[in-house]
Length: 194
Image (cartoon, rainbow, N blue to C red):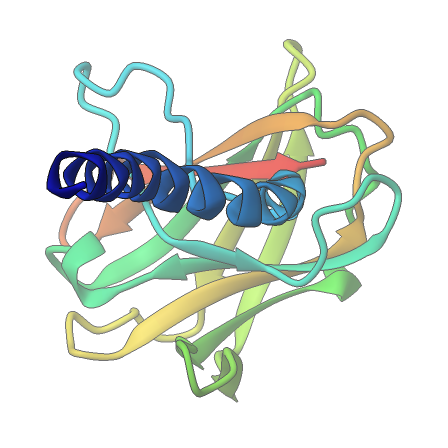
């Protein structure tokens, strides 16, 4: 009789050992169906090792053909001197017509978890859009007074419609420091359109 009770309790232990993990797996299976809707914050940068610097940006909408507002940030750590001029090289695959009336340059408050990104003060500047022989678009910003090397963050704000094709679009920026006639590389932004 004692031998039979030991066998039954051993069988219950084995059953409990196998049953509890099995039920936890079966209960958690329906939750896996929601994983496909999660968007990961992964950014792909071309040529990470060849001197490219990744700059921060923010966009309101990332869907194809949707109206979008893109903030290209220039933080204090992105510049070493006062800047007289900023050039933004727009990729030729980003084939949307850009007009200077839809582009602005401002001092910005970069948003986070509990605050929104917004322009604090519009910086008066002359804007010029050029297209060269390689069909690259270049936006040149000439602020009326140099952009100071301070703790303030600035942004180039572009209001446009997203391209028809989804993909990654890499924008490059160059800045002309005070006391120099040549522009130097500031960094790159990689915008993703779904």
